[in-house]
Structures are given as C-alpha cells and as structure tokens.
Length: 196
Figure 1 (spheres, rainbow, N blue to C red):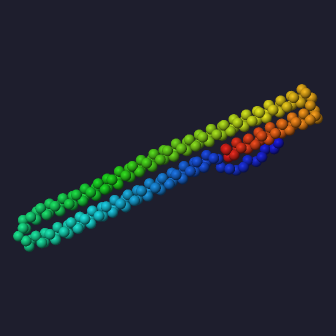
Figure 2: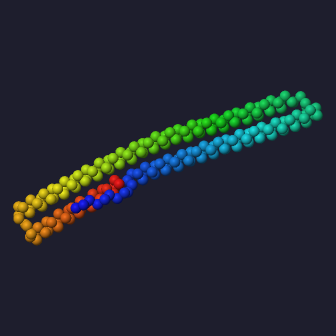
Figure 3: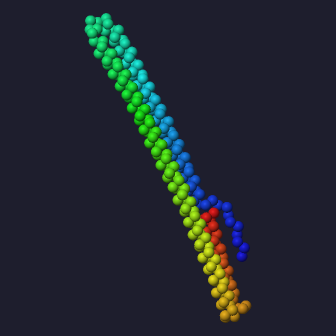
C-alpha cells in the first residue's frame, strides 16, 4: 500500500498565533489612537485656558482704564492681585493637564509592556501545544503501526496454523487485513490533517 502525499495545510495552531498577532496589532492601534486623542484633548484644554487668560487680561486692562477715570482708583492693586492669581491658576491647570497626559502615557506604556508579555506567553503556549500535539500524533501513529504489524502477524500465524490456503476463510482474513490497513491509513491521514 503506497502512502498518499501529504496535503499542504497550515497547522491549526498557526491560525491561533495569527489571531493573537492581529489582536496585538489592533490593541497597538487602539492605544496609539487613544494617546493621540488624549494629546489633542489636552491641547484643546490648554488653548481654552490660554484664551480665558487672555480674555481675563483684556477685561482687567479695560477695567484699569475705566477705574482711572473714577474716584475709586485706590482699588487698582486688588485688580493686579486678581490678575496674578488668575494667571497662576491657569498655569497650575496647564501643569495638571500635562501631568494627566504623562500619567496616561505611562499607563499606556505599562499596558503595552503587559500586552507584549502576554503575547510572548501566548506564543510560548501555542508553541508548546503544537509540540504536544505533534508528539501525541507521533505516538498514535506508532501505536497504529504496531497494531498493523501485530494484526499481520496474527493473520499469518492463523493461516499457517489452520492451513487456510485458498479457502473462503483465507479470503475473509485477507479482506479483514485490507480493512484494518485502510482504517489505519485513514486514521494516519486524519492525524496529518491535525498537524499540517
């Protein structure tokens, strides 16, 4: 009986490895988009604070000009204090935004590192699973080959012991042997499909 050529199919585990790689790429794309979005939002917030600071300064400048014409001009130092406090508050807000962005980026970096470690672990598990499946299939094939050899030996012993040459029982034994051979070959092919 001639063995059939092996079909060229990808291992089942390779699909899982490709799926894990795609998930890793999607995760990386999502984290990059999140980082860009976070930076954009931070810039918008800082621009808004700059606009509010500029608006406040212009309003206080107008107030100073107006107050000089009024008899209550002695209140000008309070206006300067208020303006300085508003500017410092604005700077503190911008620093808080920058700190939030830095913390978020550090968190995303940690997530990327953790995901990379998980990807490596997954790849290792897939590799070990492939090796385990290959070893199990090889062991199964050896068992099948031993079964075939024992069946042939038993058939030959029965033929010689009972002297069934050219009898209907000999034809039945030959047919049984062919059936066992075909069954074993089919099982080997099924195992090849699992590993290739």
